[in-house]
Image (cartoon, rainbow, N blue to C red):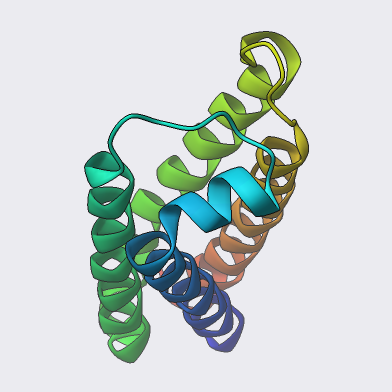
Length: 132
C-alpha cells in the first residue's frame, strides 16, 4: 500500500502544480513556455486548471484511505493511460502548424510513468489485500 500511496501523492502534487499554473498563467505557460498557438479565450484552460486541482484533492483523499479503498485507484489508471495516449497521438499527428510538441511529449511521458506506477502499486496492493 505504501507504493500506491506514494504514487497517489506524487501525482496529486503534479496535478496541483499544473492546476495552479493553468489557473494563474495560462497564456504565459502555453504560448511562451511551450510554444503553443495563442487562443482567443483562456477560460477553458483555466477550467482545466481548476479540474486539475480538484483531481489532486481526490488523489489525496484516496491516498489517506488507501488501506480501505486502494482499488479506487483504477480510475486514475484510466485517466493516465487515456491522457498519455491522447497526448502521444496529438504530438504525432495532431499538432497545428507552428505548434511545439514538447508540452505534448512531456505530458505523454509523465502520464505513461504515472500509469505504470499506479499499475505497479495496484498489483502490490492487490497481493497484500484483495478487493472486497
